[in-house]
Image 1: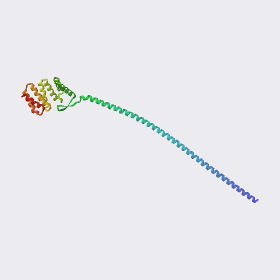
Image 2: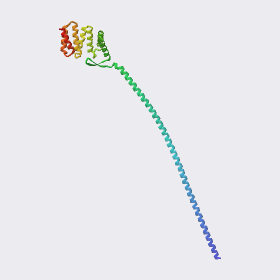
Image 3: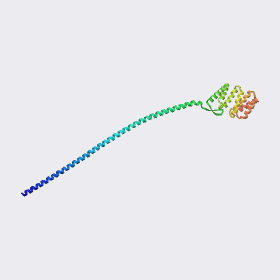
Image 4: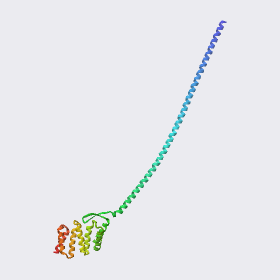
Length: 260
């Protein structure tokens, strides 16, 4: 009996031990499942957090892309507006250039028109009887007209024209020549005394004038016509002495020879 009990006790002990080991093993398995669940939950949380972060980042990127697109669209609109403004300014500039060109052309035409109108009124330089001087256009027209009449042989008309000229333009550069031709017109009209007065006026006022020797010879001619040969000889002799190289001096020698 005692041996049987011992065996029973041993079996009981072994069974208890198995039970204890099973309980321990079951507890260990339960512990491992709990850790696995926690790890899974933690992984899920990380994945979820990563997904949320990814979605937020994607949303932020999309938002940034939209902002960039709007900025690019605004920039494109601004560029297009600037192009329109540049085109408008270019058109305005071209219009201003055309208007400026038209204005300059108008001014040029106005200046040309004014010049054409003023030109007949501007003083002109003339050279006559070895002298250069400036005269008004009206002086030149009247003197040329009087001289043209004289050369046509219309001495009475020429006399009137030269007399009128000297009254109107008493200080003209034409005055010495006008006196000379007036004296010649009067000589042709047989107004010898009046002719001598104008020849002498030329000699006194312009003693260096190239027409003076001819004026002296013309005075002698007037004296001959007035039958004052003595005065004529004296005038011719003075001419030869004063202007020995002049053509009028050669003519004076011939005339003096005939008077003797």
